[in-house]
Amino acid sequence: MASTEALLPVTSRQDPLSESRSDPITETRRRRPIKVHLAIYSGLLLIALYVVLIVKHDGSTTQNGADKTTTESRARLAGVSEKSNDERLWRFSGDRTTEAFPWNNSMLSWQRTAFHFQPEKNWMNGPLFYKGWYHFFYQYNPNGALWGDIVWGHAVSKDLIHWLYLPFAMIPDQWYDANGVWTGSATFLDDGSIVMLYTGSTDKFVQVQNLAYPEDPSDPLLLKWTKFSGNPVLVPPPGIGAKDFRDPTTAWKTSAGKWRITIGSKINRTGISLVYDTTDFKTYEKLDTLLHQVPNTGMWECIDFYPVSKTEVNGLDTSVNGRNVKHVVKASMDDTRIDHYAIGTYYDSNGTWVPDNPSIDVGISTGLRYDYGKFYASKTFYDQNKGRRILWGWIGESDSEAADVQKDWSSVQGIPRTVVLDTKTEKNLVQWPERWFRLMWVLAAQLDIEAEFEIKKEDLEIILGDNSVEADGEFSCETSGGSTVRGALGPFGFSVLADQSLSEQTPVYFYVTKGKDSKLKTFFCTDTLRSTMANDVVKPVYGSFVPVLEGEKLTMRILVDHSIVEGFGQGGRTCITSRVYPTKAIYGATKLFLFNNAINATVAASFKVWQMNSAFIHPYSAEDLSVPSRT
Image 1 (tube, rainbow, N blue to C red):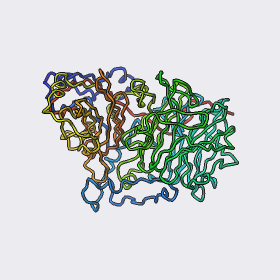
Image 2: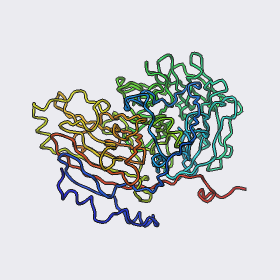
Image 3: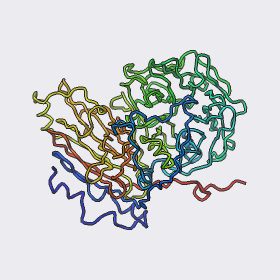
Image 4: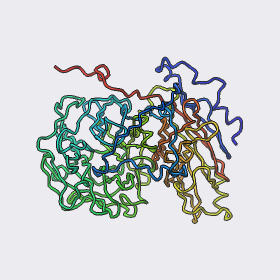
């Protein structure tokens, strides 16, 4: 264990959370992030006092007569996937007939996030920047916490954290979107105006593409939208199923001056991206070629296509192409609910794209992912305001539909991440929450942790040179058994959302393996096996290999926001989002631990902890918006 002296920087005789919260601005100026440097030989260390999560609550419980009515999902009829934790949901209870966990209102209220975007209630799933405001249009069910009755919700922000809910942008009021206003994308035209393409599910459940545009382009809030009278502008072409044609991308300019889009689909089990050219967004020419296709990957939805710079760390407008540019194709796999991407070369002349490494092509199980946890239906947009590309993903629930109905909401958006090509490896993207995230007032309900780890050099040399230390087999976070399974060089990291007895905890950690070639390989993992005592929750171990270059220390960043834990390994080369639902490690009982379960290694740790406050997301008012009325 660490020495007593090592504990001194992270404990205090005075509880730093006991100060008044009445002046949050003063609090911000007073509070500094916790900075700690220590060595962990083996064992567990409680990071005391500073990071106990304290939130007032009434401890109320659900009444016996609570409404148990559920909304029947229309997802299967519409041709999209509904929530299906089914078989995996009961894996950890050992008995599928076991009754669901008796959640009470106190537990469920704690689960609601504070600095991640989500509607006030119910179920949710083309951001853009326009006239000083970031706009977020999201799929939303105003009538229940399950999928169905999909409209476009609308919110605006000045900083991508503090959001104001606006009236619905579009509702299903026409035959061509009678069963839902689904995913769409915005495109800025040369004159600065906006067009929006979106998928509608018709009165016959056929997926078609529709055009909409702002009713008043001078309105910075884009409150009203007009649907094109000639909708739909695209219908499923011959050979494409009526329910396999959705999610148009942002358009980009071709060398011939036309606009080009791609739309997700499939032919049998081959996932494909169809390509269309247009000059006015009303009439289209379908290219004979596909942007890309990969056999045995199933339906591709929420396709994204964008350029990344090989030399700069800034984002690029979607139409940029050239010598120092690579292109990313990303698709959400309807079969697996995983967002896969690959990096490659785009050929403007025929509208095709070729991956740099076909062995890790889009949708292949061993291919690259944006996130190795709960993260789906993601979308990027180019932020022309700050010259960056922002990635947002939808984070569904890992609990039961019954629990979603009881708490009256379901799913959230991940923290916005900048996304760029890793110019060091040139083989993967890196994602990182922007620094704006730390400009919020400081209280003690949520955490932002940044840490560096370094294995003692002498220990590494002994292990690498000792033939008696057997090489690890094909290690996998998912099948490893979690953070309690010890190896020579791991695991080590943090246990977040833990109670004092560690009966509930969510470890986020590194695990270093020794290969048969005596080379080291590093994995970044999140273990939710013991995240909750509840039995109606999916609790996997997430993670993957993370590239670590020569001379680099191991680094991680963890964002904790009640029922969401987002981990970023090695500057965002590998990312993991988890949903966790503690029953004991909530409110004042929540602790943070630092641990080292490596058998043969001393690990030096240096970390900082920020305590984050709520983003105060709420409905708009004229005062909030500070927009003068127009007469």
